Amino acid sequence: MRILILTHAFNSLTQRLFAELERRGHDLSVEFDINDGVTREAVTAFRPELVLAPFLKRAIPDDIWQHWLCLVVHPGIPGDRGPSALDWAVQQGLDWWGVTVLQAEAEMDAGPIWAWEAFPMRPDRKSSLYCNEVTEAALAAVLRALQRRSATGFQPRPQEGIEEGARGSPHRPIRQTDRELDWTTEDTETVLRKLRAADSQPGIRDRLGGQTLRLFDPYPEDELRGPPGELIARRHGAVCRATVDGAVWIGHLRTEEEGNGFPFKRPAVEVLGEAARALPERAVGLKEAAHRTFQDLAYRERDGVGFLYFAFYNGAMGTPECERLLAAYRQAWERPTRVLVLLGGPDFWSNGLDLRRIEAAASPAEESWQNIQAMNDLVRAILTTRDRLTVAAMRGNAGAGGVFMALAADRVFAREGVVLNPHYKNMGNLYGSEYWTYLLPRRAGANASRTIMERRLPLLAGEAMELGLIDGVCGTSPTGTENEVAHWAFQRAADPALTDDIATKGRRLDAAEVEKPLDAYRAEELERMRLNFFGFDPSYHVARYNFVHKVPHSRTPMYLARHRSLRYRSKAAYRSGTG
Image (cartoon, rainbow, N blue to C red; front, side, top):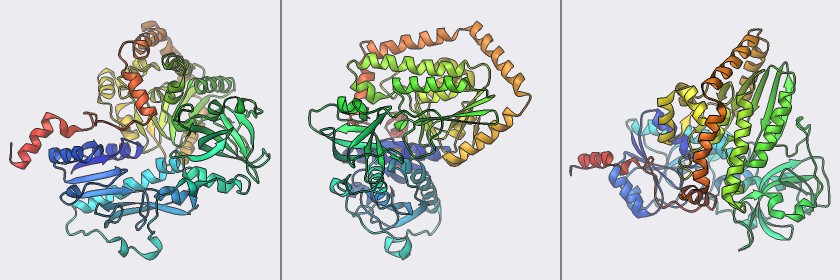
């Protein structure tokens, strides 16, 4: 089927649908919803059989949905309407929710239902649910809708025809007054629900440290106590604020007042400055905490296998995160294990450099340089581990240098449905480092490596395995992936043949070093990166600024907007009879 994907941005859900539909042989093109005129040009040029809208912030123009079948992916159950569907569901603590694929009509989210899929709700942040349950339900519902589009005689159901117990009701947009926190009366669970419902956008407006801020990235705290509403501790960039029956860690903040600081998320301690640095540091070791708390690095061990967990907000790894993960890796390396498993977060494995911290630096170029050096040090430590088997278990999506950090391990596994973006050019033609010029050809070969880097499109885990980037796909959920990889790791640790395999690995590293030292790969990559950071071409700095400040797209990149190529314009002319 010829499908035009109309979307506000190429976000994680849109990438997953694009990759899944392309893998199934559909003819796809993408147009960002910039304005009505651009959308009209897109449908005229591509002449799709279907317009699919997985992520929109405004209505599709009347003259488009009246002449083209337009299916909208709505993160709510049938009958639910409005832009705050998932926000309300999380804040109200509902037990289950769903995703609906409906036909666009005059009233937003009111058209007939083509398919819908329900899922149980976890008590977690909105962004995590969106990355996992919402995305899986959306894929299932879209595929069912496409089957019905191809079937003879199918008629979509009016929303009023959905059984009463499975039908929601219209919701007005959620406002900041609905999210307002009262730290002196509300318990931890109530505060958490509100914060989770606003993460990762728009956050909750509140007063903290004498400033008006937006609060993000919450974690429960079961042991620390203090006067309700007061800041009582700090830890690795986060601050802890007391509730009436416990406390909540706040990992990231954004300034709200005009002209005060940077208008994007940063670690809470950096935003609050002296007010946060005066708080007591409540350190937590690598051992997994026995109670709920903020712990972005943890380690456990069993039967000769070490498991090193890391979960950084949105997968961003600034210089401090890289250095702390490297220190944790070295601690784990000192343990008497035969297999060391690296487990990134359930939503993101890693997305490489922390562009927000770089943007906020006194010299973004210098901070970029420090960040890439720290990433390289971490990747090299994994890559040159000679005395045990290293395993990367990718439970969540990964991009740019985060992909190559995973490829530094001896074995790489990913959850089914994980989306990888193993390229850099979308960030202002960035060249990239993290030893990718060594790691990628070693796994995929020179020709496939060039194609992957130039194509600049997302890869599903299954596609990555076929290309040789990763070694296996396992599990359909973050927990399932962790369990399957752990089972495999225990078997390998108990296998006497592993000793010979580790020795063989050491000989391969020696041979590769003789052929071309790792230092040479790093120097060549960094020579190109220095030009990106310090050279005359400002593309990287412009792209980073636009990304961090959420500057609206002015056009759709050509590698996505295939209908704008000469080949598709010629096809469209032929189909319309004008060619």
